[in-house]
Structure formats: structure tokens, C-alpha cells
Image 1 (cartoon, helix red, strand yellow):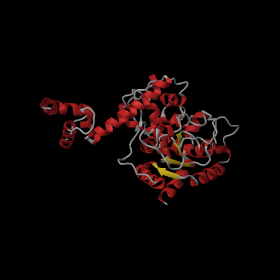
Image 2 (cartoon, one colour; image 1 turned 90 degrees about the vertical axis):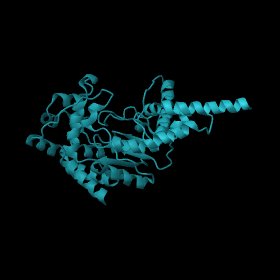
Image 3 (cartoon, one colour; image 1 turned 90 degrees about the horizontal axis):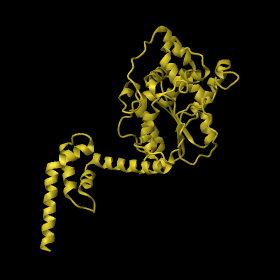
Image 4 (cartoon, rainbow, N blue to C red; image 1 turned 180 degrees about the vertical axis):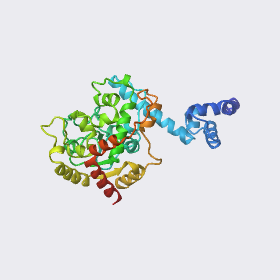
Length: 357
């Protein structure tokens, strides 16, 4: 008994020595930054305490809020890796858009109409964390716009969350009973952001014949880009909101219904917009998320939303982006922006009115 007590005492002393000598360095490596005094106190308490049969280092990290978060993220990465390994497709990381293995959504089924450069990734980085990964529809082509990629699957889709660059007819075909929501941005600002985002993509990372829209942004000035007449590009830069709300495209159709009957198209798009479950405003993204959270009866984001900012993309460690300058907004550019968004600006004004109401 005396030997056992002496061993326990020596073990506590050794832990205390390790804590004093190596604790600050271990904690800094674990958090990725210098720990605060309170975090060091929390770590020291956990490191030297024994509540279960676990290594002291894990106890120490569990005692620190950011340490607990790091351990949870490690468990998530292990979960994603194990499933990727089973598919023969190993992964080294995951994003908040992939869901949260510690969550389980019990609310109504949702469909997010994700329109490019409207803050959708920032909103989803919060909302998707309310869903288990297997509760999110795993569409590997969700980044392809609907006029370029036909989704033949018909509903009902079992997963409670569908999101991607769809249009309303596609979402309703996949599942007519979903609550569909979206976020809209001032149309001219969105179009400028889209052009600069595409230009920021490293040309070495793409095939410009396949990623043709990005190729156009690389080859053409802003004015020429806005005035280009390729139908597939027009469907991405000309009154995009109206096209995604109605499914009316210039490509793949005998006539462009926005050209021959713009008033009828706008009327249909306006009615569709009014009937959506929720429409947020990009310029009020945090408030939009809070309003959506209230409707869904969940907690709003704890921190301001921020994701996929074109001017910051070159800092992304993936190497997919380069730093670029901003194009001049000349009178000719302004005229082209106005022409390309004349109907979308009416829809945006309607969305603002709906948002304030």
C-alpha cells in the first residue's frame, strides 16, 4: 500500500513538473495561438486532475473551451476520413458546409436556392452545422448552374437539407413540399463580384474550355464581359435572379422568354419570390440569419457571418486563387450593368420590401 501511495504521489509530482515545463508549449501547439492566463489555468486544472481513464493531455484540453472545440473537430475529421476511406477517396479536411456529426435536425425539410456571390456559403457555414452530414443531400454537382446541368432525380429526396446552384423549378421537382429560402444581393454589386471572383481563380487550375465562364472573365475586360452574347454566359450574368426563379434560360430554348415577354416573366418571378419561405438580404446577412433562425426556432449565429470574400481569396491556402486588381467602373460598364440587371433590380426591391415587412 505504501509503495502504491508513493507511486501515485510521484505521478502527481511528475505531472506537475510536465505541466510547468511543457504545458505552455503544448497548449500553444494545441490551440494554434498563445493561450490566455485563464486558459492556462483551465488547462493546468484539467491536466493534473483525474476524472476518468484518459490521458492527462486530453483532460487538459477538455478544460479549455477552444481545446474542447479542437477535440470535437478532430473527431469530425476522423469520421469524414473513415467514410472517405471506405469509398476509396481519402480526404484531409472537411468544412462547415458538410454538417456536424454531433447534430440531428428535427425540423421541417429545407431547400436553399444558393445564388452565386450572395453570401450563401457564409449563411450555410452556420445553418449546415445544425444538420448531421447524412441529413444533407450529397450532390457532387451542386456548384453547376441549372442551365448547364440537368438534375434528373425526382423527389421526394430523403435528406432534410438540399442546397446548391439550383433554380426553383428544380427544387420543386426534387421535393415540392420543402420550405425554400434564398438570399439576394444588390444585383449590380453581385455581378461585379462574380466577375472579379472568376478572375481571381488561378488560370493554371482550370481548363478554360470547360470552365468557360471563368475563361471569359480571364480573357475579356469587364465591359466586354458584360456585353458578351454567348447564351450560356448570358444565363449567368443577365437577370440571374429572374432566371433562377422561373427556369427561363437563353441556352437550350427556341427563344429567350426574358427577351420576348419580360413583363410576364417578371410577374411570374415576383409571385414565386413572394411565396418563398424566406428571402434574406446579403447586405443584412447577420440580421437575415437571425430572422431565419427565429422562423426555424433555432439559435442564431454566435458570431458575424463571413465567408468567400473575393478580395481575400488569394490568402486561401488551397492555392486556387490569385490576387487581382479591381476593374474600373466606367460609364460604359455602368450602362452594361444597368442593362444586365434591369429586371433583377425590381426583384431585389421586392425582396427588400419583403425583408423589412
